[in-house]
Structure formats: C-alpha cells, structure tokens
Image (cartoon, rainbow, N blue to C red; front, side):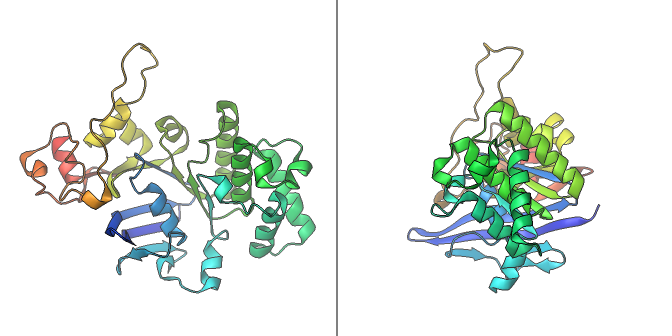
Length: 326
C-alpha cells in the first residue's frame, strides 16, 4: 500500500504568558492508503494537537521545530504558508471530524449551505450535485428527514445529530486522509456502530487513510490496523493493533488496558493508573512517564534515560525506558 502520510520528528510548542509549553515532542508516525491508525492516551497526551498540526489548525502562538516533516503527496505541508497551498489540504486532501461540532459549524449558516460550499470549493461540480451528495451522506450517517435537517442551523440539532452532520461533512469530499478526533463520543451505541461501519465501508471503497483519536480501546480494537499510544506529547509505544493489545510492553499501555472493566467479573474494582498526568509546565526530564511508573528502573526514576523508541519485535516499537521497566 502507498504511504499517504509521514510525520517525522514533530515538535509542537505554544508561547503562553506562563512561558513556552511543549505539547508534542519528537513524534514520528505514518499512515498508508486504506489503513487506520488509532491514537490513544489520556486527555493532555497531545493527540489532538498532533492531528491539527497536519492541517496547520493549531493557534497562532504555535511553534514547530525546523526539522519537522509532515509529508503528504511528497510535500512537507508543515512549511505551507499561502492560503492556496493550505486550501489543498484543508478539506481537500485531508478532512477532520472535530471533537466538538458546535464549535466547528458556523452558527449563522445552515448546515446544508456549509456542506455545499465546501464541496464547491474542493470539487469541480455544480451546486445541484453538491446538494445531492450532501443529502446522501447525511442519510448514510443515520440522519432522518434529511431535507429538513439540511435547511436547519447547528443549534437546532441535538448533540448527537450535530456530530453525525459533522461526520457527513468531513466524509462528503472523499479526502485521501481523514482525521477523526473522538468522532463517536456524543453518539449512542446503536448510532456509533452504524457510523463506524460507514467509515469502514468508505475507507475500503475509496482506499482512504484514517487517523482515529479516541479514549475507547474497544473502538480501536474494532477499527484500527495500527496503534500509537501517546503520553504527555510523546509516542511511548506503537505497532499493529493485535500486537499492542495482546502483548503490550510499556507500563502505560498495560495500565490503559488494565483500567478497562472486566465484563466477566463486573464486581471487580476498576484499576486506574496511579497519579495524574503532569502539567506541561512541569514536564519531567528523561522519561515522561517516570513519575507514574509502577516499576521504574533506577536510571529511569532519576530521569537519566531519554525518550527514544526501540524496535523490540518486528513492527513493534516501545520507548526504551518503558521497555526496560515494563
């Protein structure tokens, strides 16, 4: 399969009143044609910031490192500055399903008008065809009475319906790469299953690559081919979905899996990962997970081991500190 996306050595920092904050550090990932990469981790792990960096949607106080590469179709889009270049990737080659649809739709423009407008921007079609594509996609994500919903505003829809409309809008342009940031969070279980099936069908039909961001390891197990586990802006483990879920090496990955409820023993207490994710302003030196690691090595505890991925098995990469204490 062809490689759609290649991220190399990506650092993302923000200039704030409290100082410069590192949100993402030395992230390297790739997505192939027709492949789904699942990114998991707690809130504050840098998942959404990484995804937004691909489309340059992070705020104006963002600083990227000079040697960072986000390669799409042979071009380093992290270096794009002109509106024309950015328009090629935003909604054209790459679409994004945002975590909060109410903040993504323009409140004073009807849902249908926004869907039609983006299709006219990125596809050489007429307005009637753009409307037909939009109505069809709204139907496919489980929205009924689509003509009525097409002519409504975002605030007139329920949270779940807005989320489905956001998914329909992102999928309607048939991008090469889809960034899905918690796309099914606001949906009930039945609609979630329908939307996941729709996404899988479209991925298969159009050979679309997907980055799927979620806290739900169950969803990842159903949808992803590859997994990247992030913690405090760093990728601590990555590999195939079967390998990571069945044979986790990093203590953080093990903690995430152990925290899942045991369906065979519902009375068993939950096992949360001890402690809290540190503030980016108080970022640990060396291994970023060392303050919460259940079995740290002496060097790791003292912050003497730098974050670096090592290949422990073919295609299975783990942070070198986590590999020693996991």
